Structure formats: C-alpha cells, structure tokens
Length: 101
Image 1 (cartoon, rainbow, N blue to C red):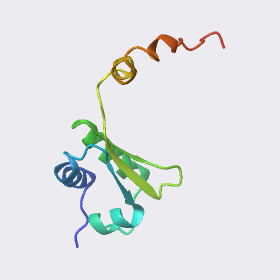
Image 2: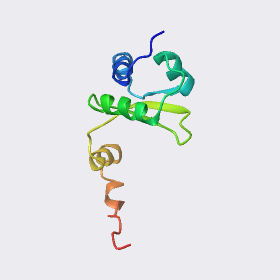
Image 3: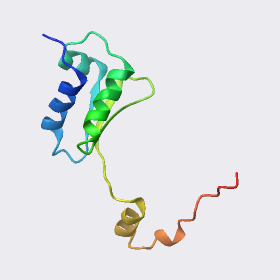
Image 4: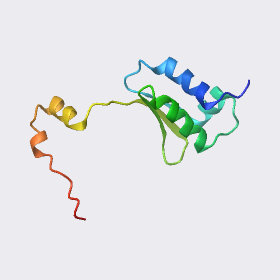
C-alpha cells in the first residue's frame, strides 16, 4: 500500500463521513492502516484538521494521541443553542465571565 498524504486522507474522511451528525473515532492503528503509514506526526494530524475545517469538520485527538475524533463543527453561536434548547430558561442565568482576574 502506498502512503497517502494528509489531504488525500482528509478527502477520504470527508467523503465517507460528511453526513454523520455525531462524528466518529479512529485509533492510531486505524490511521496507520488506512494511510499506509507506520507512524505519523502531530503535523500530519494538524494538516488533516486544516483540510477538514474548510468543510465544517474537525479532526482532533486526545492528550495521549492514541484516539482521534472526526466531528462536525457548527457555526451556530452558543447563545442561540441555549435559547433553542432551554427556550430562554437557562439563558437568563448565564452570567458573563469575570475578566478582572
């Protein structure tokens, strides 16, 4: 198997999971197998993330960099989400963060 680039892998992920509303997870072994690589750097992960963000998807990892997550990204502001979910009930209780320190 030939090694594929971050862009090629991002395109593969996008095509296969674009309609998934909850996202998917992949292990380091999954990525090695799917890309034909024996190892990969954080730069490779960042490049995949960059390519996918242009299509409303994020590619992120846990702190151990053993599990990776492909998740949809929303442009909806958080206030609108609260208004929608709680019909202004909780929204009234959200206070600004104290910036004084």
